[in-house]
Image (tube, rainbow, N blue to C red; front, side, top):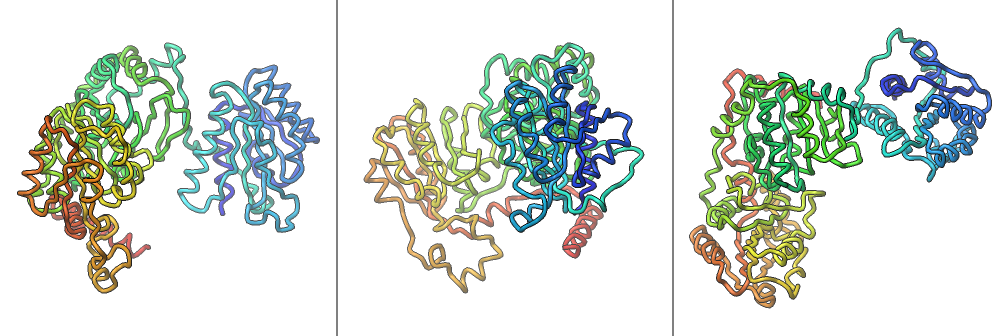
Length: 576
């Protein structure tokens, strides 16, 4: 465990958040933090022997200067002695930052000296409380940094109030260190709608001559005002909007085929040209979360979060700015206060790449081929619901008209409820509602077809590969044949939806080749049908998996770059 890193992050962020006044109590567990801060002329420090008095002393400072003040103490009952002042701060709404040193969590309730569950000391009377993790890995350090940022933001976020940071330290007497200049760790800056004019101008200036990408996720409700604001923004800053079909984002400068593009192997120069300097995220999840996180790990990209969410969302681990406000308000003001216009052709480069990455062929009878056939014959004014797993991944690989609204439960990405959600949507929809869903998702949620309000406009495409292709990677085929799984192996009985679909009033069709899929897709497109339709495609899970994993992935690298990539990968494997 490296406790010095924890101290560095606390020390640096105290400075960056402007918390100059620090009150110390005597003790050993927080000695490294005391030692670091007392060497730094930025801070004004106060020594108060009694913890109860120290915390109330800090309240007096806050009342006078109207700014957050930190109070720090050792472990054990020293912490609980500050409870009266914390409660007073809670009801006075004063930004008191309580920082407490602690012993390792592993020793709790093991007769360790001066240890109890300190993080519960002020439970119910803080705006935010966190017990920092021990730092053993890079992920631990990122998590620690994020938590400290969250804690310090909450001191004055949506009103003032006390915050408690509890941090572990193995041996404080071995961790005293000297540093002439504390490293500046990442600070996450919070901006709100009431920013002053000069603050807006500064924020807009950060986009000058930068490659700007907007990552557009789910559940941003579009309005004419938002559409107009986005159009002016992307044209002013030459920005590109990266998204997938389920965002239902069709603004200018939008690239919807990001899942397909990110599966491409680019040359070093191409990837350098594509990477943004600033990535602005709005909305919820995207289908390509994992892919873009992998790219971001190699890009020197700053991440901005925009929207009314009141939580820090740092999935890329590069978050530097939060704009907690309506998306329309953000885009309008960034343009309003900009004094420049970007014109380096960044969007045009993305569009060129987009045009050069083809759709998968998908001309065989497997899940990818079934989905392609259904989508190509779907009316342009229909709406599409999609189940999770392969279904949602495969549907995103094909071009779709902007008139088709698409939805999927990607908030948590579970298989449960996709059928019920689609039925609920169809019940309030006058247009045809298609659902593409796998057998595990369908049978898990099959009672949804029992709903009495099921409309005749419902169209279901059920991919039945006897168990879910995502569970059976191609490299598992030999093992599966040798050791068939009791419930999902190839020797288990094929379950079909035919009986249940007919019982629930569906016209039912089973298909076993692409010609049958083509014929059924035309029946489904008939808007005059007086009954809902369910088409069940019986495919093979290994072929379905191959159809996705070998979907005409494009490799644009030269020979030397391919060799270099293999060498890097080999080194990574050896290191593991």
